[in-house]
Image 1 (cartoon, helix red, strand yellow):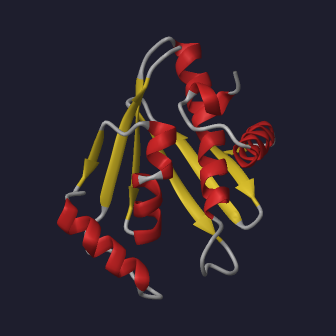
Image 2 (cartoon, rainbow, N blue to C red; image 1 turned 180 degrees about the horizontal axis):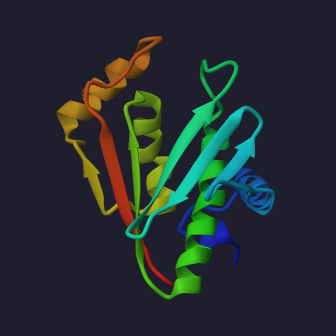
Length: 157
């Protein structure tokens, strides 16, 4: 059973490709000043580990219009592999906090991101705020008025 199937994401050729690219991304990650950096094309994810939690920052250079969601998913799968490795190594659970004011990332986190991380807390994400996110997402330069924080606990396997 592959990594994606173990995490409950349906298997398909596209998912197998994403898993393979995530593994390559994970293997080719770099560390700069204690921050682990994952790169796919113009997308970079910086993963930081503090004593109580992991945090991350996603950046895109160049063209930002309609970024490929499979790249976002793939780069976060690679980061999850590293978080899981570190938690397994320490034998202690650790929280992962993901926050964004980007409506596209908020929608991604609430769908594909949820399949990877099984968020234990999302806020604020009631029906009314999801409607605001979707409307903001339709604007070219939409930014949410309020930061959305997603969190989960990575446990040793």
